[in-house]
Length: 56
Ligand SMILES: [Zn+2]
Image (cartoon, rainbow, N blue to C red; front, top):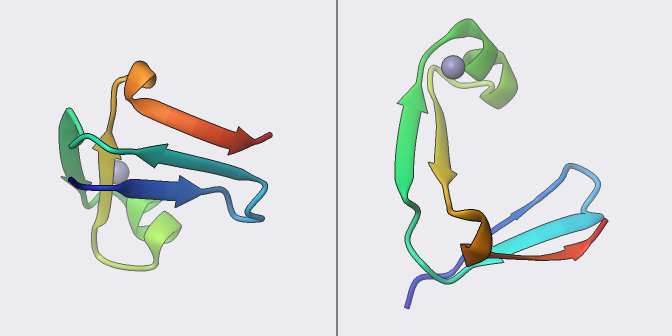
């Protein structure tokens, strides 16, 4: 079983999913380059009911 996790910059909000993402994208626009500090930004998209959250 795959486990995916994410958190905000300060760590107050955490998200977990135990299913594979519905969609994975890779983008090379300037915003994604600035956001990640790399040539590409990658993101996974999950259905809302597949995510559990802790924190605010
Ligand atoms: Zn982009």
